[in-house]
Amino acid sequence: MTSHTQQLHLLNRPAGEPRESDFALVTVPVPDLESGEVLVRNTWLSVDPYMRGRMNDAPSYIAPFALNESLEGSAVGEVIESRNAELPVGTRVSHFAGLRGHAVLQGEHAMPIDVGEAPETAYLGPLGTTGLTAYAAVTRIAPVRDGDVVFVSGAAGAVGSVAGQLARRLGASRVIGSAGGTAKVRTLLEDFGYDGAIDYRTERVSDRLAELAPEGIDVFIDNVGGAQLEAGIGQMRPHGRIAMVGAVSQYNQVGSHAGPSNLYEAATKEVTLRGMLVTSHFDLMPEYLGKAIPLLADGSLRTRETVVDGIENTPAALLGVLNGANIGKMLVRAS
Image (tube, rainbow, N blue to C red):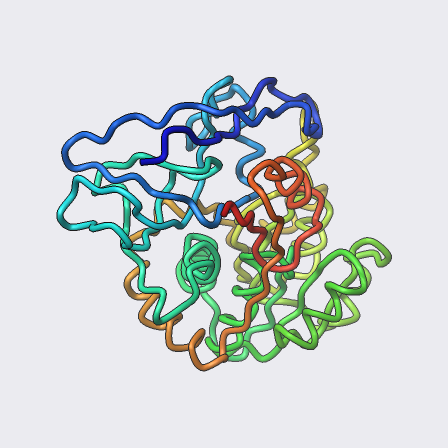
């Protein structure tokens, strides 16, 4: 049995951009298993933008991270010890006790995954909650219809890269994405099938969006907020639909956040702006997986991963995803 493992702890609640010194990697003993429990050796850890909000001690849809305790997040791994007959040693599982080397879990908190039909990392990306977020956004929150022009911000990220491809399959006539840097823009056009791409670091998003969609957009999947949300509202057609998935541009801001200056324009265009939390749409997961697994297997759904090696480098990976260092899903190879 493994006697000790490593956990990532939050030492301080950052004001503004987090620093690696706000975290510590701590070695702790692994407790003995009780009936119904399994010990999982985590192989891959998910790092996601929402984790920044959990560093604040403020009410939200999910509890804040506790100081000086193991952080948590999505992970996949292998059962290496079991007191649960339904999860024998060797079973590959996904769970929410990541950001640590090993996890002791009750059986109901470990979901078996089939690594024969997809790589285990896919269950943290296109077959995990990021893929489900994209699917819910384009089917339920801001449904894409035949002929729609769709704009996706943060389009090279884990959610955006899937959302754009799903929008195309739902009948979008044109899909436009924004991303930071020439490499990401090239990836949108060459790998993810976008018709147009905007480099928000070198181009004014509102001006470039007007060039790429001169007659306006019908659907906006927004992962960024701020100036890009304002640009999207400005280019919306009447009765357009906006899925407010995230606002990564504001996560590190201190103090109040300025809203879009043209919000009243959304009212005059009768635009729908709807926020979403993936936790409200888990009922869609079976339906989504039934569609996504075959698409992933035959290459119709294309994905990318950015991999950081070593659990000790998880803070760097987290800071990277907040600053847009990733293309596709940001992952930490734990072992």
